[in-house]
Length: 167
Image 1 (cartoon, rainbow, N blue to C red):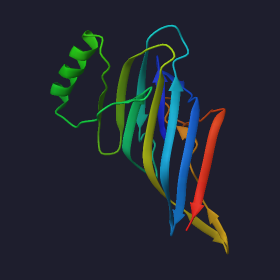
Image 2 (tube, rainbow, N blue to C red; image 1 turned 135 degrees about the vertical axis):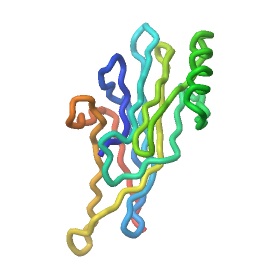
Image 3 (cartoon, rainbow, N blue to C red; image 1 turned 45 degrees about the vertical axis):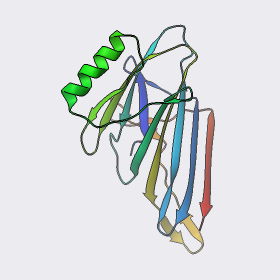
């Protein structure tokens, strides 16, 4: 499985914070995952977000992308029209997002992230749980990110929060 990953210059960028909040309800664990990335350099950064690569049995949906507290509006449009709008916005030094993909995989480009700006990516999710024994619920939440090198990369994050409610 893959959560989603951020790359800068073709390198996996580890998140500054990761929060997973959910609830076990019946045979599913559902909730929200949020990852933040901080541009700690003195230069503009271009992030490439990968979603769904190497995915297995997790369903990610209702994505939100923000820079600082400013949300991006995500629209589905014809690729060439979207690319033209994106290029015009970037040429004018405005913030813009461009993504393309299929039913199971998407990449999103987010250029012009200023120094000290925080990029936040969040999504709702559902994942099945197991019941290995009486009064035991198994939640296997993947802590890997998509990688261009075959095997997924293990998530590295010093500010990680995981919480769950049980119905």
